[in-house]
Amino acid sequence: MERITLRGTPETLLITLYAKAKESELPDSLLGDRFSRQAVEQIDYDFARLHIGRAEQVGIALRARLFDDWVRDFLARYPACVVLQLGCGLDSRVLRIDPPSTVQWFEVDFPEVIALRERLYPARENCHLLASSLTAPDWWRAVPTGRPVLMIAEGVLPYVETDEVYRLLTALTARFGRGELLFDGYSRLGIRLLQWNPMIRRTGAVLHWGIDEPQELEQQVPALRFVDAIAAYDRAQIARLSLGMRLLYEITLAIPAMRRMGRLLRYRFGPTS
Image (cartoon, rainbow, N blue to C red; front, side):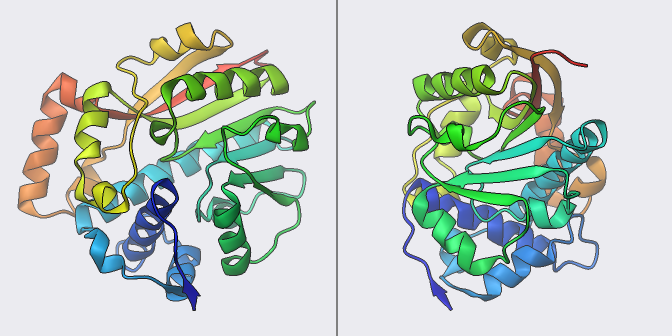
């Protein structure tokens, strides 16, 4: 069993891991992530202290599935691309999607997270692990250029200081020249409310970066062009929740400011052909 000593931002990876694992145990699972389930079984950690309920399980699994769909779309268009998972945590996307050998996949996270990942998941050809903070200089030099690059930041960027987010994305778009960026973005109101989320508070993590409108990022990182935004809500999935949670989601969807609190965002950079 792997004893967990992560604290602060790195500890939040256990929220998403456990949520995906528990949702995947449900008979009507959307994600079906057996790899997360297997990882949880190998971890010595009191997940009960995080109070991850059914709503969080379904919501996090839905977010992962929507990202998976975007990734599959990119791989279909660019079968010899580079995929770069920023702050990968213990996400099993490379195992769930099983990309062809023509894809070079890179997972980036803190050294202690990458060390844990190496012990929990099997090594995979053309999947490379980079042990580095996202804000450390020049780690991206280990990633080859000359191919379209898909950058994924799931549950990551809000924990990064605002100036560091813009500095990182400016450097990455300049380095790679062509590709797409996928991430979950939260409004400033959403960031304030998330900071009070009991799951996050128990880890001691602090949230920083939010944008109210997708075009704000274009102004700060001119290489990026906004393409799409989708709410991480799906009525078929909301129907799986309790009556109280269903009502809460309906209220959220009915109020524009609340509906915009959290969205999945997609941007492009460089030539599109």
